[in-house]
Length: 117
Image (cartoon, rainbow, N blue to C red; front, side, top):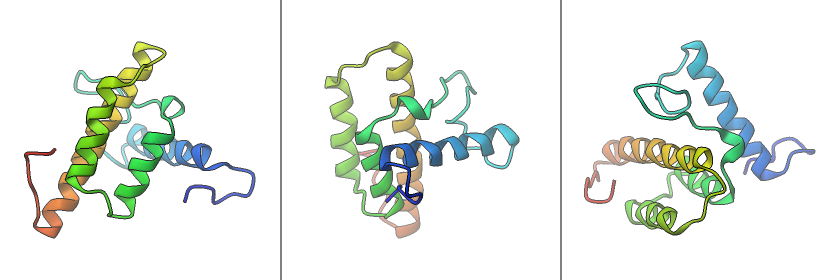
């Protein structure tokens, strides 16, 4: 769960964790190329991500996210109403990050199936 600090709700904790990943990309400590504007894609803006993103990220971290579960999440984005283009771009770029991380996990487990990612 993301509420490691008593005064932080889970969504805020999730967003702070992603801010740290973003900081690492900006400093060059990490290079997923998702959290900052790079390679022609938009950046991920953590404060624009919501509960659904928090849940999918938590499942990824717990290694309980299946390819099928990710696909359902991805399909749900097409039906979701976004308040701005910036929010939509951030959420879709976040889903690309999750897809990459899920592919890495799947390859490590030997169950990579490109059909769903």
